[in-house]
Image (cartoon, rainbow, N blue to C red; front, side):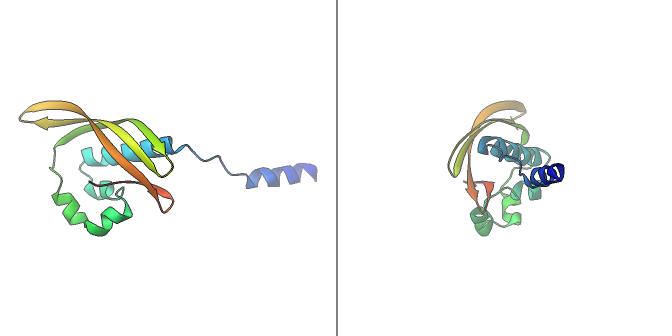
Length: 119
């Protein structure tokens, strides 16, 4: 009976929550992967509820220069309470040259998840 009780308690245990930085870095990278693949519907899914409320998917797609981004690599996420600042190394093509540049993003926690803030 003791073993069964231990197994029951162990089965009810929940995994520890991942740090916000880890969660946001993964979500930000997934968004950038979608942008590079030109999967704008998937990238749109990472916008916060407020951004999606005022920007339709079609408007979002129209705002993106297709084929512009060649890569996006999330480097860091620094979080405090309900906001994270993310640094991304973005590569894009401009006038036939590939350029790499840092880019800062803001992510916020709403409705139990982390969302990109569209500027």
